[in-house]
Amino acid sequence: MTERRDLYPSRVSTEPHFLPRVDPVVYSNWSEEAPLTREQYEAYERDGFLFLEGLLSQSEVQDLLQESARLRSGDAELDPETVFAEMESGDIRSIFRVHAQSPVMKALVADPRLAGLAEFLLGDQVYIHQSRLNYKPGFRGKEFYWHSDFETWHVEDGMPRMRALSMSVLLTDNHEYNGPLMLMPGSHKTFVTTIGETPADHYKKSLRRQEIGVPDDDSLTRLFEESAIVTPKGRAGSVIIFDCNTMHGSASNITPLPRSNAFFVFNALSNRLEAPFGKVDPRPEFVAARADTTPITSLPKQLAAAE
Ligand code: 6CS
Ligand code: FE
Image (cartoon, rainbow, N blue to C red; front, side):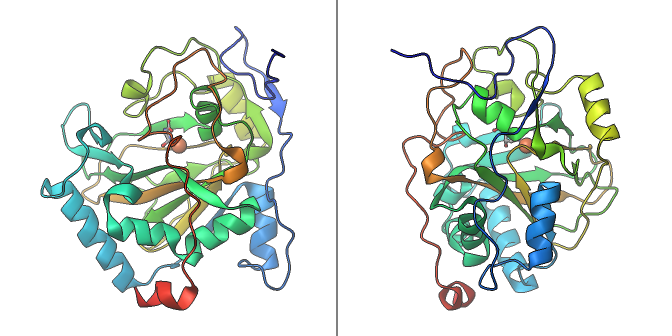
């Protein structure tokens, strides 16, 4: 059997490397019919992320907040392995596979403002690779260290190419002080390899605090010097779209204001997971969809609006 070619080898050497991205960022050409303005389209391709202020209405946000409170209350029937608590406080930090455990979240991902946009940017039908509700509670919300999602999804999940994107739907206002997402513009065009062996069942630790698969200080410094750090701020209902390889992280939240978001990863149907590129067992379905890759049919706009 011919050896599978790995375009983005990581966690395989003792030295980190900067490899060029060999995949496009946007897989559709812009036209007047596109769901983004030409400026937004060009900004997303150049920066690797886009901030859509107020994409959802305040009443839609209220519905989402109500649903996330229900999911967090313990009244909802949740698959226990999808619920992650904060290491110290025990507060719920994340609930995974929310699109499959909540009709409200299922409808949200199919909304043309989300699925339709993902289909356009990825130039394909799309399915949900991973979804999670992140509650960064006030006072004790822990940080997510700098990382490229694709580095993990490639090494640990077997995602072959950079043809996936994340949408973070803000459920609470993002201020500069309550642990907002930080992104490095343009970092998506460089694949930063990491060093270190992936431990067995790494996700049990990395989804709480990731220490393997994160760039070293010199690589981060070099990336920062060639880029900057941007923290999109705005009201609940805004959406941050970011490419699978954009370097990002978020600081801890010691303010009284929670920072919660619903996070959906859209993967192109042509980019479904293969065997992990790292020497690891595949991660479970709730973190990386393999069995359930049904393409999302984005609801027609009027139907979605009426939901
Ligand atoms: O490992 C993962 O798939 C998850 N970890 C982080 C910190 N971001 C992407 C994803 O949710
Ligand atoms: Fe991430």
